[in-house]
Length: 91
Image 1 (cartoon, rainbow, N blue to C red):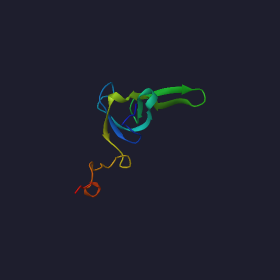
Image 2: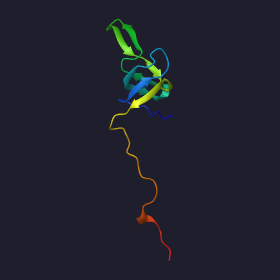
Image 3: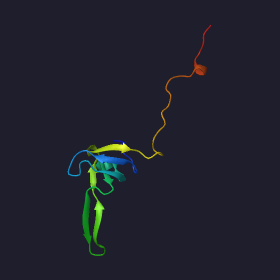
Image 4: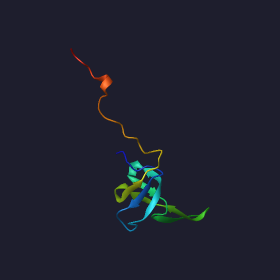
């Protein structure tokens, strides 16, 4: 399924413990229908080499609302219909 939320977009959480918070999309994982949002659902992971690391967890895309898209990703709307030059005339 194609997701309308893209990397770099601003989203707002509409459900869950982080409800009402806004953030920028860091990563979209279509196979899991998940999105990583900056500063939301931060989880702590431990590894022997690096110690404690904080990392954003996945949020299901249905719990997010698109607030703003980056200008580069916003599509210009096309005029639908045929122009006068392409219409056939019969006499």
